[in-house]
Structures are given as structure tokens and as C-alpha cells.
Image (cartoon, rainbow, N blue to C red; front, top):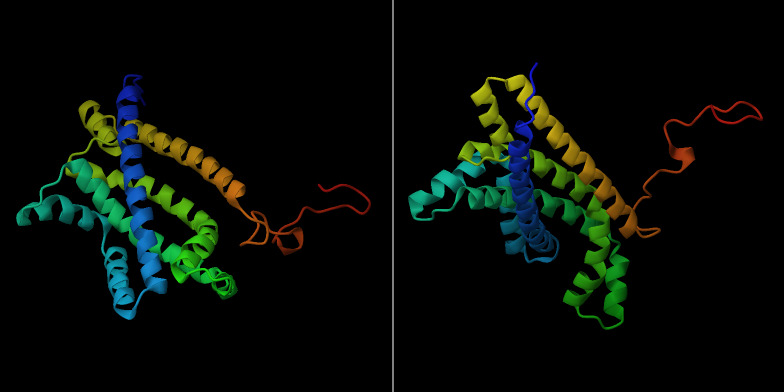
Length: 239
């Protein structure tokens, strides 16, 4: 196996593009997913149906097909987007569908008494939903949302198919140039792993900082509910 240090600057350049695409698509997903979740839970019947159709379409079709529709399909009707915009838009529309379902479950997990209490003190329905229910739902949905962020970081690797030199695209270019596929893609995998580990630690910290006592489950289950507990000797310390 051979390794060349001059690969690292190029792969780092590709990683930067991967992070940019992930950040943009997740931001799109948060905004659109929040609106979809609100429509699914609080909207009229026609709005719930419309949001449901959107969610089922983007969850039921392959992400690669969606990217190709945006990048190759839209120009046929006069809408031409850059490769970066097409990738970020397609991934954002996709993750919005999943985030909407995560948030819908979180909204439904907030007790109805919370909304009734807010209404009983004269708070308008819209203000009660956005000021009382949604802040609690966002805390509940954070673990699932964190997982979606990491998934989108990895799913963004398909954008090399539309000529973007993200981390995967740059790795493929280097591997084809030097005929060192195993070595290059192992380094690419380590790049992804390092970013995922950093993100995981940051998201765990965010989850601990925003968690409210009594809202949702604790980070760790109480000892009596764990599947495994350390063995203890009589009168001694745990092994």
C-alpha cells in the first residue's frame, strides 16, 4: 500500500464542499420540515393530505433519482441550476420529509394539557403552538434530528455523480489518477469517520445542554432498567 501526503490538501478541499452542501441541505430541511410537520398536525384536511403526499414521495423514491430530476430534469422545462444548488436543493427536499416525520412524532408526544393550559390563560392558538408546544417538541426530536444530520453528511457522497468534487468526488478523481483505489478510499473513509465523531460529540453536548428534567427520557436509563449491570461481590466493589 502506498500513501501520498499531497492527497490530504485535495481531500480537505473536497471535505469542505461536503460540509457546505450538508449545512445548506440540513438548513433547508429544518425550515421546510417544520412547516410540513405543523401542516400534518395542525393543518386542515387538504393541507394534511398535501403534506402527506410530499413526504411519501420523497421518502418513497431513491435520493439519487431525486438529484437527477433536479439537475438533469429541470433544464428540460427551462429551469437550470448549478451543480451545487441542485445537490443542496435535492438533498434539502429529501431530508425535509424525514425531519417532518420526526418532528410530527415529537409534537404528538407533547401532552395536550400543555396546549390547553396555554389557551386557558388567553394565549392565541398560533402563539400557544409556537411558544409552548414547539420548544418542547424540538428538545424531544433532537436525538432523531442529530442522526439525520449525520446521515445527510454521508448521503451527500452521491453528489459526485453530478460533477461535484466533494470528498467522495475528489477521492474518486485521485484514485483514478494514481490507480490507488484502496488507499485513497480508506483515507476518504477516515475523513468521514473523523467528521462524524466530531459531530456526534457536539450534538451530544447540545442534547445535554438543552435537556429539561422530566421532559422526554434521560440520557442514560436508571440502573434498575439497564440490560447489564456490573457484577458485585458481597461487601465488595463492582468488578
